[in-house]
Length: 306
Image (cartoon, rainbow, N blue to C red; front, top):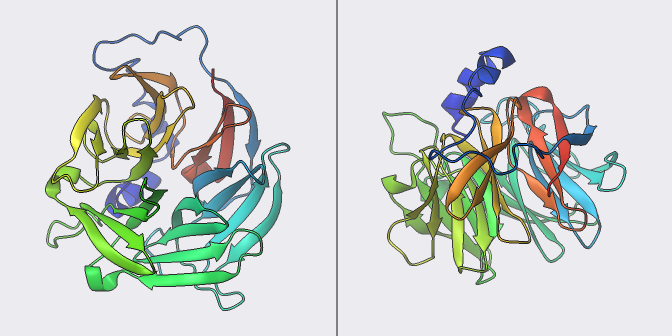
């Protein structure tokens, strides 16, 4: 979400956000799984504004980014925890801002490329060794006018792509950009108002396109080289995390109605409600479990997805 909407919602109290969940489905489609909705099976508490949970099947853990304060503050106090996918407990803090020569202000989206953990950090991309937290690269995107980097995904070409949601400042031309990182160099992959404050991003190898969760009503798809994104599914808007399930269905979170939605066959239905601050989700591909960072509640909740 944008910096402006984050601050507005963070001060509005959970009751206001929960009241927005009265709509049961979108596009006139009633949920086909209304009698088998996912239930929380566990949670990791004691976090500090957790924004993203990225599952690593090789290590069987989640990496969880913690903003730890204002999502735009250069306070060098962000950190990344490793959480056991079996016990849901924090094993250790892999990276902490201000320690061991690391700068980490407000870490958000995460992506894995081999043993490298990529992290979006306001206007810079950080790359760490996923085993010991050693800093591998730090790429400053301010020369490309980055303002609020949000989610990260590895594309079909092996490059790293990151969304810039923007700050919501109408007096400045910010956001509505997707950057590409390759060979230690950042370039603009797409810049257009049609992106509509892009937040979540994930690569769908089945259709050779990215799926993008923006601020607007439509989840979008986009292939590198295309001048515009294409509508994929309509819903409540103000999306955050987006992830694929193994069968091709798509999960997406929305701050507009404090919910998680399932996209299947072009239709979107609500499967988890009353989850204020639903951020950048991860999926345990071994067990079929959704990890849902609850940014405003300082925890990650886990749901079994059928």
